[in-house]
Figure (tube, rainbow, N blue to C red):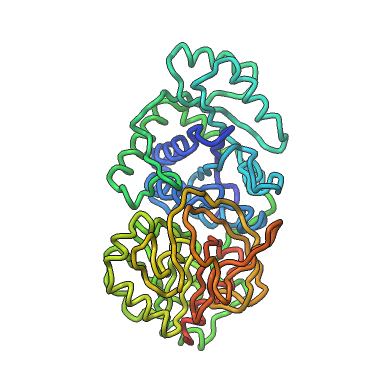
Length: 461
């Protein structure tokens, strides 16, 4: 695949400006024109990529310079964009907002520079007119390495309001590529951790994406946006696409035999467990696993032959009653863990493995209790494996992300999963038998040995 894939980054001065509406609508609008669109999201967000997938018919992928390192942003982008005509990257927070205390690291601006991609700035114009020129000028001139190629005005009140905004922006020297009116039908419901995931509102989500696309088609110059994307040159650094296969691994007859007895790795899915990076499944498959998805809300048994279990993030607190009511599956998970099979659980998976969640029985794999709180725990984490586990050898350093309004008591077991570095060092999570359970969301592309180690343990446990 050419490293000069046409691409745009959709950014904004701040959260709440309309990035998701514009990015998702633009993806769907390009797809409707017959283009194969590659969808991407800056940062650790799991929910927006679900809407991107609806808009494009392709897996939504994340680009996170903190979790994976700046050196992997280009290769991961090219991996996701293979076979596509154009790529749209939705930013995170404000254009220049990155990891706390880390300068530009993991900001939308940082990722745009790593990709050599032009930026389209989405501005909430609802409470301003001439001041929009000063705002846009400031964002466009702040970092000369960030190319702001155009502006899309959002929440424009009227034709007269649009006229005033366009007149002001002529002085800023940044072209207006679209103006969108306020439209209630494109809004998507939110709750304690952001938008409600696609898996929980399939029909309504399809309608919302269609409305976003219609609004973008009506209010944006798609030809100019596509031309801006096509003006992007090669991805800097001569990046080659990332691959889930180990670059030093060469298949042998022994490998072929292992493939014939590929261990079944069950991966939790469905509405309660929607947080997962696409690369995790790809890495498990490349490591020789037979990956099978199941839904803990509906399936009363683990997939036949399950040798290992991966339970990612999501919203078990929303579905606690249904998860608790599925006693046959809870018992099956407990039995799998009891016999020492590898189990990797992140955040929601950690809660599911606890003895109880908000007073309702869960799997009881861990002697811990989980409950909802009002407090939001959010942020990047620098972590080191405290001891050996099915995921990592002691001393393995990984970066993670926490995002939850729950608490688990106790917060760690006799053998913690991670030591979290920083101003307030602590240990967290649980390593028991073959179980590795933690609040930290990690991106395995940053440490592919995690997936290989897990699959090997599935073969031998």
